[in-house]
View (cartoon, rainbow, N blue to C red):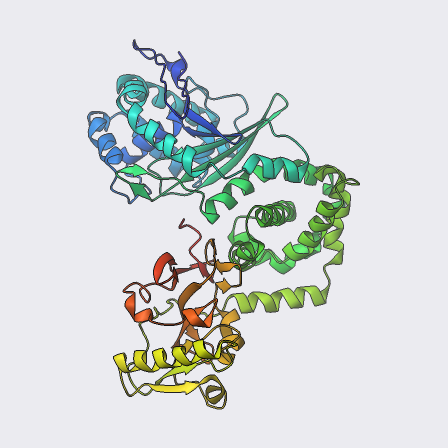
Length: 549
């Protein structure tokens, strides 16, 4: 009988007798219109894949992984691992196994709508039938159903309970359906518990229904339990994969008109081919989906946060036509009475491609070059400045609160001497008159109160305002403090460190925190840590780590 989970208390109904093949149904929980599931097809695949030596499993040392290895070791010589490896070697890409699994029914038999490309790359239908049959037999002889529905029941419940909580504020369906003006049929996020081989999205069209799937992984754990959290990256992934189901059919309807803009492909061809987009129409779809996701995320989150993270990453991937499409999508959002659905606006939206001029391309190319800076492999931490005369401590002299400014200067002097009396203390105005190329720079002041900081703070991948601080999330509040490091804008081989705050009065006594300089950025209030993290390189662009929550 079907497994049913009710939340917040899990009341589990299971057949206590033998488990028949038709019982291969997922555990699931619905959160804000999305079904978050643990899918037996995915878990069975991971078990078999580990037995042929698949190296892409999670690095997290969760007991579940070891349980699998021990529990199924007697069947490592079963035909299934060998047949899976054979199929993969015939030409499957990294996402083909996942999409193959989504096209298996509850009996692990191949559905009629298996995509031709998956069949071809897998060595033909005969080979895939052989693989499906091997999966069926493995599940039967190994007691997989007993493992999935009884032995791991409590573990799966904990994962889903935690996921239900962490995703409670993520309104993906509302965002999608409000934006596109259309309802989807089914939204499913599959939690891939021991994967370290990627995230995947798929839309399956069947009998007039569109079912949206996102398969997601995590390397985070708590108490031995995999933890799935709505990081910026995962929110973007889910919205992205689901958006394809709304965007692709509409772009297909206007494919003839879009062919007229195909010469634009040449400007992004190399970057697109590296990402697997080998002709114009997939590039159109990807541009439109990414533009739509950016607009939805800007509605759901702080716009500044989206611009300094997801947008910069997309530009690093060289989706150069995003800005023009976003201009059009903002017109769409402002005129929903005239354009109630995305479908009604598409004829106007695609005219964005007719507005791509040489000047536009030149401007976006220059922006891209700026986003790709600095071209280095490592960002220094705040403690990595030299303890000698090649370091300048630069204090601001333009704070509106002069009493706070005076205390800040005294703190900077004291702090400098804690490291070395050889370090030079200068004002922002003095620093402007110096050749700064060969100095590490440690700045003290608000963004407006320190002229050197005001001139260069935009180089950092984070930002600060009266409302709060933007890292890989928005930390709202008052009297917030920030320490961050970067490379010097005057010499990428030198260090640039910032001690700042929303108010000058809070730029004081940083030495009392042992955590302040151990990360690329540290956010605090009264020196109590609120957020910390590092910058990571995504598509050659340095941004706060969007995989961290």
